Amino acid sequence: MTTVPFTRRQISFGAVAAVVAGSATAFAQMGNEKDNRSESDLGISRGHAAIHQEIDFAAGASRLYQTLTNSDLFDKVVLASAAVNSAMKAKLGSAPTGIDARPGGAFVLFGGYITGYMLELVPDARVVQAWRSASWDPGIHSIAKFQLAQHGSGSRLIFDHTGFPDQEAEHLAQGWRINYWEPLKKVLA
Image 1: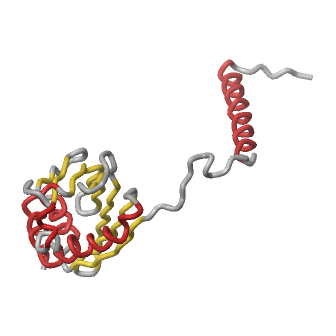
Image 2: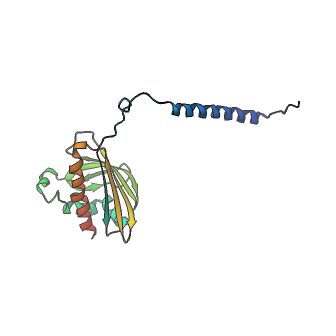
Image 3: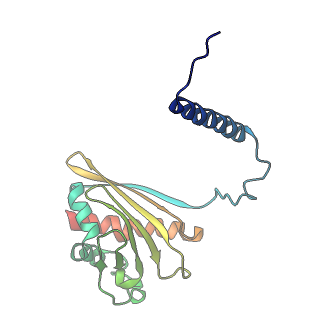
């Protein structure tokens, strides 16, 4: 029987391959074992409210993005909103509309009643915000995601809002409609 000499490189590769194969087997076995803890023991919760809305606009995605990320343009939306034109106006405060359209940039809307931070900005495509209402307990921020796409000669906004207090769902769903989408349609017309 002839012995085939192995180079140091071949031995090192073989050792690494054996370790990786052994780790893969152990990992696969770990994935097949049932964890006897319940979801609640693991801290998993599946029953939180979320809002998903899809809105079509006559304006293109670029113009919609600019309006959502520009203080002067969005202030026109605020001024056309139901909140500013109702009894709620007294709650809104007097802070000017301010939007710092950079990741990490702050925004102040509706007289300071709505505040937060820009998490992600993809021009003409997506805006993701850490968003909060002044009526919420301190430290609570939700995630508002505005996904924009060309749709025919206009655009479609696919909106998802999560992480807000569950009891606020109906109020927020209505608020997005009368304070964002309807005035946006007027401003963009």
